[in-house]
Image 1 (cartoon, rainbow, N blue to C red):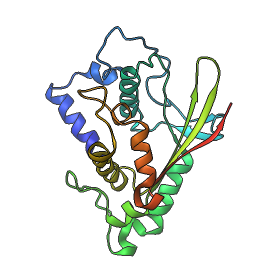
Image 2 (tube, rainbow, N blue to C red):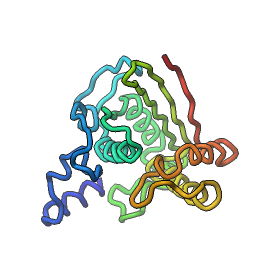
Image 3 (cartoon, rainbow, N blue to C red):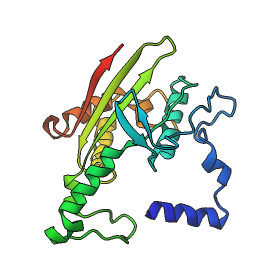
Length: 216
């Protein structure tokens, strides 16, 4: 909510071009790069997704995430590529159940601040009780496909993200060779599988896992 208010303020100030916000390839530096506009970044409405066997809907972070994914794909020479992202209704239901079971934090003496300061984030109990599961279904041009599941402990927006940032710094300092690409690049481009392996080792192997569910 705070990020949305901040973005609205910047747009109103005239310092931000609305067309940039609408362009799903805004982070791809080459205007002539191959592209497909089949998906602008996320689910447009609720629908049943046969690939995952669940009902999904729009996710407010999908347009942002999709732009970063497209930048990675461009830098890796893998455009054009369709990409879309959504969230299951079950995820929202579990989130609501968690918050409701704690009485919005009043039951544990640490209520959720609905108007937090910049950088404050949710209370500690909510960050520690959070977790995430993301499934990726990828299909190649030749028809081969794979479905991968990424799971992690901790609120993905705050606690888990801070741990990922720390592990990325350690990976750059200790594990990885010098990245082949430079400039404003993404972790996938800079570190790839090396970072994934470090994340799976973090916290004794209890922080994140990357598993292939099925392929064909």
